[in-house]
Length: 303
Image 1 (cartoon, rainbow, N blue to C red):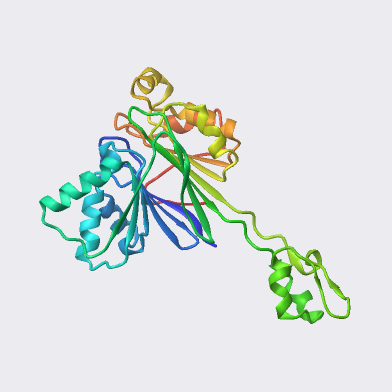
Image 2 (cartoon, helix red, strand yellow; image 1 turned 90 degrees about the vertical axis):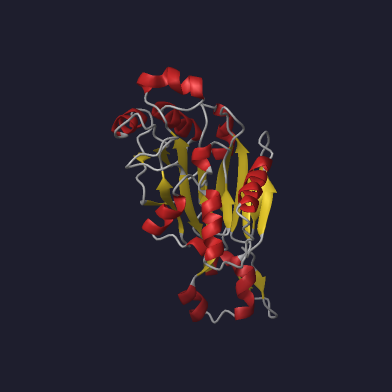
C-alpha cells in the first residue's frame, strides 16, 4: 500500500525563490491529505502533479499566515473546477471565521460542503479514522497554539501463503479467520493453523509532522518510534537565541528530538529565509541523528 509524503513548501514565514511556505501532501492507502496550506500551495500542487480534487482532508497546524494563507485560494479553485464532494478541514475555531469572511466578502458560494473540525490546541486526540488509517493530533509549543499530526496505518491482516493453500486445498471460507490469526477446525477435526497457512503482514507504518515548535520533549510520547518524522529546523546553532525567542527549533534540536524518540528517519525543513541553503542545518542535524534528510520541494519521501 502506498504511503508517501510530497513536500510542496519547506520555508518559513517569507517565501523565497527556492523555498515556499509550508505545505505537504500525504498519500496513505489512497487517503489524500494536505497538511498546511501556505501562500502559493495550489501553484506548487500544479507544478508537482498533485490533483486538487483528490484532497479529502486538510490539516492546518496553526494560524500563522505561512501555514494557511493559501487555503481560501485553493478552495476557490476547487469550486471553479466544479468540485462537488465534501472536504474536511481541521484547525483552530478562528480559521472557520476567517474563511467565511473571505468567501462571503467575495460573494462566493462553494459548490461543495466544507466540514470544519475544531482542534483543541491544548490537548491531543483522534481527528479521523477508517479501516485503513488513523490520524491524531497533539500539542506543540509555539508563540500561538499549534498542533502536530500523526498519521498511522491500521494493523494489516496476515497474508495467505498462496502455494500452500492451493496445495492443501484450503477452503475459501477459512481464509478470513486464518488472515485474522485464528486456527480453523473443519468438520472431521482437521486443524488448519494460521501460522502454517499465513505470513506476518508488513508492519503498520507511521508519519509525524511537527511544525512550528520550540525544542519540546513533551511531544516524544506521541511520536515515539515513528517511521518518518518531519520536524521544523528553522535555525542553525549560531542563531539558537533567535530560535528560543521565536519559539522555533534549531536543526540540532530537531535531531535530538528524533534521537530521543527513536524514530527511523528524520526530515528537516521550515528553513529561515536568512539562509541561502540548508546545508549547515543538515550537517548539524546529522552530527546528532545520522539518518536525517533535508527536504527539497517537489520530492516525495516514502514512509
